Length: 331
Ligand code: 8YV
Image (cartoon, rainbow, N blue to C red; front, top):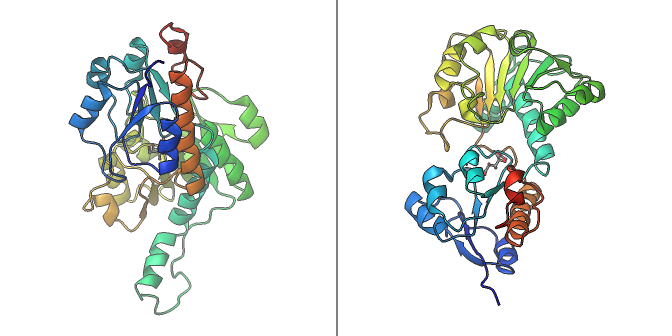
């Protein structure tokens, strides 16, 4: 009988998920649901693991990958994998798996919620009522900006972008998009119109950032980009904080170069409680909950377990970011 592979799980997960893993592997678990695994523990565990069940807060970099001699697969809980050095993993024959598709609708729902919150000042309104500050009425009391018939600009037209475009049609919004490649099918099906990045910034009332974080997209929303937006426009970020330069965003908001922002993501997470963006009433901050519905989180965890099992038993996983490694013999 061959020994079972060893999987290290970097957060405490529901017993059902751990059980699912135990059916085909020995399993080690970092015993905290909230606190990320310390670097030294992660390095030590990765060095003896065949598979890692990882998340965004785990840095799977060259140092870790080079020392993890047995490692065959990293299953990341999320569609994004900017925490992983995929180039190095590919070079070393380590499969990198993610969880796309199953979180598309949930993240698109949250994106619409942020657009509504920012435009219609829902965070401020909620705080006002809850804190007993709703004392009177006046014509422009808590008056926000309309959503319907406004122009939505989607930067990064992947599956989530398309799902947002679909929802925006229900709000009678005009949809523009910018993407590395034109999407003729999305243009036809969703009536989304392609624009250069600059034109999209100039024309949109709500600019939604949905790009992955890469060397190309890091800092793409900078001072120059915010200056091109309308002073009445909102910046909505559901992708990664580092796609925007936060100091430039703060400056644009302070100077009134843009009207407000809805941010589910920050350059550093969890965001510091004294972060200047949290102090601005025209900013709606959320704690990175794009995919955080119970149904979707279960589906994501189950998908990670399936991807681990598939790779470790020599079958193709449902999702793999670097499929070329699957062709290699040791898998
Ligand atoms: C995850 C995300 O919750 O999928 C992504 O890329 O940002 C979120 O859905 C996050 O990665 C936590 O691991």
